[in-house]
Length: 264
Image 1 (tube, rainbow, N blue to C red):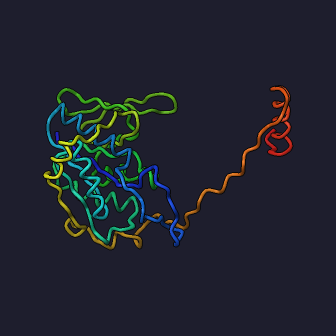
Image 2: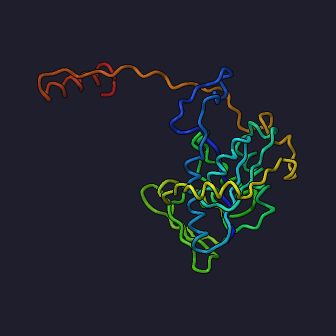
Image 3: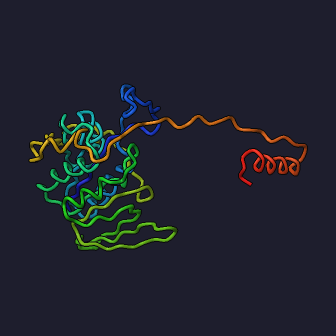
């Protein structure tokens, strides 16, 4: 089974994010970049599927040269080869343009299955997976927390949480699945895996290589434009409720909620 995983490189979730002077971007000088956590579940599920059915896992990412590090991480986990779409014209592209580039790279490949994270933890939009499936004209199954393949490897049954219940969906292949927490526990890259990753193939492609028009990418072509980034408002200090007994404290809390907070 040939499996593709679409990856995104994002700021470390523990990084301190600062808004840049243009109020439309963030300061990236000192940021540590990592694989999007939701994409890690996609890589792990792809590797588990390969271990069961055989085949090959290819990881694809779009962005500057530093995205190579994230692709190498997936290769160290066990993926077989990587593709980096790297083109200055793509800088600042929105989710639709990113999906268009990823789909263009995938169209020329043989594949049975595509995994990608259900959303990126930076923009938090959840658009790319569905858009890739639309460009490729294949089904997409989103927010999946359980994947079960038929013994012949030609169809898949998945489970998706829906308002406290579970929705079970079946689909033939090829299909795109967006992954989320709870699907699996991503493995760590072993030292031998890291060493092997250095020798695994990693191709680099430009928009032109994929037959795409550069004018459809970049800041100027965005359908969704960032108007302004604002820091969260500063939180006021908390208030300690005084009282000699729990009953007095409860009464004082009720008074404050009624008279000051206007919540009661």
